[in-house]
Image (cartoon, rainbow, N blue to C red; front, side):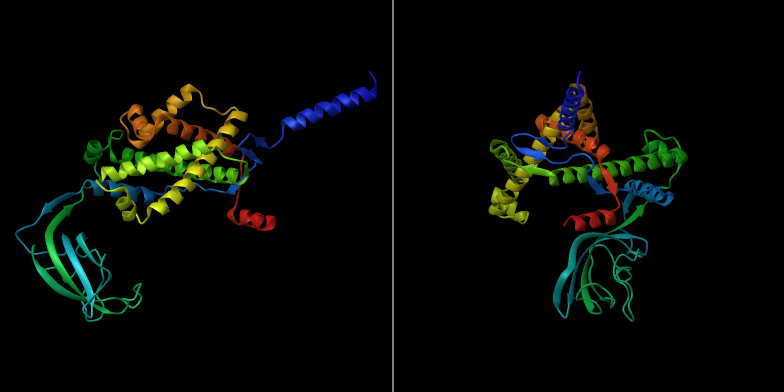
Length: 361
């Protein structure tokens, strides 16, 4: 065999090999110019500290508080009161100065404090009875945000109720009653730490998934997206929001107005979101097909169970009724694609990423 023939064979094999390793993927709708080595900002998983565990446990204890209404005496420091209030300066009500049904612990320092000769907001409620309407006068601090800074304001207070709020102590008995997995305080603290670490890791994973998907879309060239699919997506959004309006016994236009939108605004936003959703679907489907990432029936089944549990549904079928099986399957596929991209991405410090972006411009 001549050397010339061998050289031709080698060059042919190399050509085929290089063509097979092309970093571009394409179909009739899009071309993915790059999917390996996508640069994303580095994400650090938030540390779970002893302080954060204690704070979380305090929140759990707070959810077990008991409330006893007090009807035989006046409000005292340490009580929690339910009040309506309306504030005015020089007889004119000011923005943010009125509210109803506010629960306020007297002495907590949540509201305006004492300033010069003026007593604090909370101090002036002490000594009043349920059902009473009365006036107080306070002075906003000089460094208070907004135009009210440094000004004297009058407030009309309506005292709706006085309550004694009792927060339980963290004891083995409380743990046994409120945890399915722990039997004592020490075990409960470990349980909470584990849940927080799992939650923080989930947040990190989700942030990375969003980042690589965004980077992937930035590396994708659109040819022409399927119009029928965009229309279907748009109609699904329209039907969903009309359903929400119906649940609230509202006309669709009134529902949109209540959410700060006109029908024209909604149409524009919905079409943009529909196009973005279809673009994401087409790109992820292409990558999944070319890299053999399509989940198996078993993977779909396992993920659906995981989603149902995470979202608090009794079973998968109930979740499917809410979202639709196709939507859930699409989400599972996109998550798998995102995990593939995360494994192959390059995490860089935010400053490095910004410098790279500047240089590329």
